[in-house]
Length: 156
Image 1 (tube, one colour):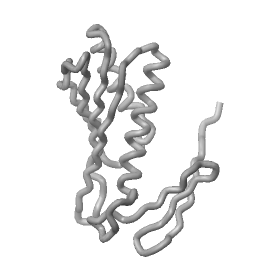
Image 2 (tube, helix red, strand yellow):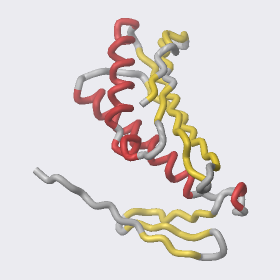
Image 3 (tube, rainbow, N blue to C red):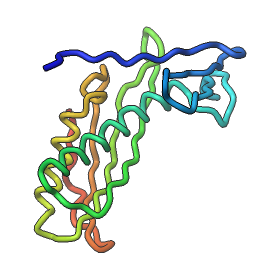
Image 4 (cartoon, rainbow, N blue to C red):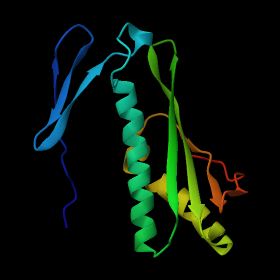
């Protein structure tokens, strides 16, 4: 069994505070810019968005993989992820990433199991576990458009 994997990208500068990131064999390449808050142009992906998107996509794929492995059926999973950047005595850094998963289930008896899988996905998300800042979760589980729970807030 392999104990390590490597993932490579290449980035190049195009104009001031912007560039292009590519990964061999993966399309499309992605144009990026510094965010407007740091003198970049609006309308582009930023390194900050990349980090938050990495956490969000990792959480969603981790949850759906765990759900499939445990034969847990759900109607949908939508996730809002927010990265908070704050300035400290050294400079700017992410102080927290908040995940807001919205899980829709068909049966009320799946509520506890859905909550457990959301928490397990948060704890096992590779990207989230690799962050230096805290990762927190504010889940909601709904059934037939009615809110079933939003009380389970977890902070790692």
